[in-house]
Each structure stands twice: as C-alpha cells, then as structure tokens.
Image 1 (tube, helix red, strand yellow):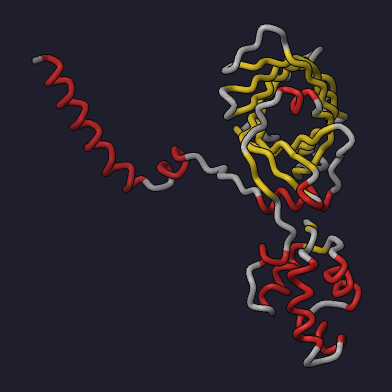
Image 2 (tube, helix red, strand yellow):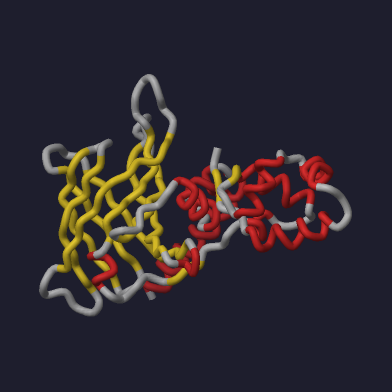
Amino acid sequence: MSTVTPNAAAFKKHYEKLAMQMPPKAIVATLGISIPTLNSLIAGKPVKLETIRKVAEKLEMSPHQLIVSTTVASLPHDPSFYENLEFGYFIDHARTSEDQKAQWHPEIIELKQVKGSDLNWVWFKGSIKNDKHGSFVVRACLVGRKSFAILAAHKDRTDAFVATFSHVAGIGEGSRKQVLCGIWSGEDPFSRLAVYRIFCSKKGEPLDPAEISQILQQNKIVTKFEDDEMAEKPKHLAVKQPVLLKQSRRLTSTGGE
C-alpha cells in the first residue's frame, strides 16, 4: 500500500475546529481512523494514501490538500546538476515464474559531461549499476534544455534501455530535494511494450519510500497511446479513414495539376 506525507498544517486547521466540538475519541470515530493515525496526521508522519482519501472525504476536502505538495520545475540548465546525480529508482516487473508483480528497484548513477558539448546538445557519459540487471554503459544528453535522455547498454549482454526526463520535482522542507522525474521504456514479462516510472536524485539525497510515493502520486503521466485508443474504438476509426483518404486523393490530384 502506498504511503504519503500528510500536510500537517492543513490537517491541524480542521482538527482544531473539530476539537472545539468533540473530544479526540469522537474525532477519530468521525474520521474513521485510529488514535496513532491521528497522531501521525498531526505530526506530518507518513500514512497510507487510502487514509488520506478517507479523511479528505470526511472533511469534504480534496485529497491533494492533505498531502505535502511538490514543486515542479523545468529541467536545470547547469550540466553540474546531472553530474551530481547518484541515486536512481525505477519500476520493473520481477520477471520470474514465482512473482510477476511490478516493484521499485534502486540503482547507482555516474555521469560526467563530455567535452565538445554545445548549447543545444550537452552530452554526458558514465554508468548505471543496479542489483536487478547489472552494469550498463551510459550515454546521456540534455536536448535543447527541454529534455534529458539516458541511453544505456549492458556491458556483457544485449540488454538496453532508454529513459527520458522532462521536469524536476522539489520535495521535503523548502523543496530541498530536487528529483529528476521521467520514464523508461522496455518490455514486460510477456514481451509487450511497457512504460515504467524512473526517478533520480542527487548525491547525499537518497529518497525514502514515502517520498517516492509522494512524487508518484503528484506527478501523473499518461501511459495510454493514441493508437491504442483508436484501436479500441473501431467506429471512430472508420469515420476518420474515409476523410483521410479523400484528403489524400485531393492532394494527389492537385499535385498532378
């Protein structure tokens, strides 16, 4: 079950109002939680996401109002930010007959800027090591200050993957920790194309499970491809096909003239 860090300040405001009307035991009964969970909410300690949803519903609030928010910023322009990355966290399937569930895995990242990079293409080289897949040789690139991509090839096998990042999330007090947020693409245990989440944090700033859950919940991505959606709606596709065909013929005819 995912856990998140509650927004203690936001919860206390509502708790104080309830405390003026009823004792703590009545409050927990009203919110449908336990005394330890109440204390965690007041102290800002991680609680289950389902707890946040339950309490928010009772207080007639949005769940996001009761979670410590993250600040989202564009990618840093300074190459040193990427050279200072050390900790990676990625989702992957266990890929064993005993366990097919997806789970988080940690890795260690080392990057160094390559000489000759220009303003539009800042290149890096280095390595990635993780307990699940082993060691990878890495080339990475900051493209036009808008996208950061990691291309990794396994040292001893044909394994390879590509990860892309579009923004940085700040978490913790004063958004102290700057976390690179992105996705990596690969295959699931059934050899189907799959997209997985990946986060990277700087040296001396490892992420704990609560922080990972927090970023995961507050930085959503769209994983459904447009082609998949059209394939599931044959009537919609059938309407589009004649239109596209008619346009194609008209353009061809015009080109002939």
